[in-house]
Length: 282
Length: 329
Image: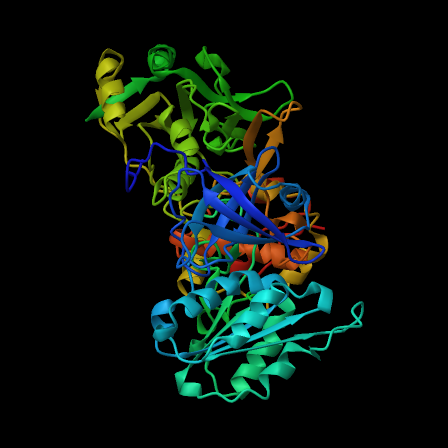
């Protein structure tokens, strides 16, 4: 029997208690939960990492952290209501308790991003993990160059973090635009319509000085990558966050592999050059 | 000269092994299946057995297991009941190799405490075997006994005994009066040509993407998952929670999952990253022959032959290395 690296007696599956501080409705199916670990400690995550959220009687699901570690005393999770666990989460209120394991996974490569212009592209609820990076860059502006945020959603009523989007636009050195596939259902919407790639085309960037990040639904990756390559970016300058089924978060349950890489440990953030040739990655 | 246990003293050894826990060995059950079950009399043992239907992984990773319990006072807690000590008697080298692989998955790096609890309860006695038409060990060095406390090399008159661990030494010391000393006869090591083909193919990084066998396999695969359920190194698991009706208590469970099932690659909202049977078979192939995560590059197929023996439509992923289908229809 091989010796363990460290003598751990605590089960890796035991979640820590966290208390809901507030709940904000983002859309009809997404809510933002602000939480604090009940023992008062910080989550100590980095942008791009995820946690396993436990709800008593429902089990666990992997959720990306939507706030940056630079904002202390709380962390936030943007959660879409899609299954039984997320439906149960949506029924919870301020003061209720949930369980948290993690943070897990490889974060965005903040080291390589330092000093560079950031082009941050997200779609749908991919803006939640991206928000952690955007707010991090806003809090440590001196460490980065220009920050360009592009975001696409299906329709106006599905745009997440509307207030944040407007606020980011006003930060000096930041530019932010968003678009919707169709303005159906909101006659008052005055923003742009069209695909996310339509927002990329007019952007002027210095390819050598830019790091791009994409977080979105699977269908978004291929066209966005093509548009970025047209702009002169190489695969090494593009990072993505991928979604897979992650039951354990620590490389044991066998579900989230992309060829030989575990999405939960080697990812969820990958450099494009590491995964673009892997079967089933994109 | 090596310690030798005459066959007629096997009963005495089994009785002595009872000191280390309840002894389980290969028996034929009432429904005709070979399985590891409690044995008290050596007459129950099927010493010439080929393979059990379910590998011994079930003692380490039970098909369904409670990993945490919840109560309002204590929150989530691991099970604190001690696991009863078990002696697994008669494991073949392939199954020993399978356990050695699972040990690496669950005990290296982040330790899986539930697995460790089950593993520490086991004493493992290996037994040499005679291969049949499904076996092809040697693929991953499985012909060398690995990770057992004691290994018995069977001969017509009895067993040569080798200790593999401190516990094995202790068993030998305690049972010294049962042993004689004999000169071992040279044995011819068993080696299957498929094992060589697998090692060569994997060393070359061969994944056979254009091989027409993939389509033929995918066309007839029933998605029953038997190949994975009976594989000594398949360990994918799902985590579930069962809440009590009072809303105050819950159990968190893990149970075997199966990469041949469609749900294995599905994420919230219904997107599935392995929609086709072909993709699911390829996922299994990659895991068996190339490894995931920390064990990338490690072949986990131990050549036990279970998947080839149980597949109802005669799919044999190892056949890719030979380039021929074993479908007899």
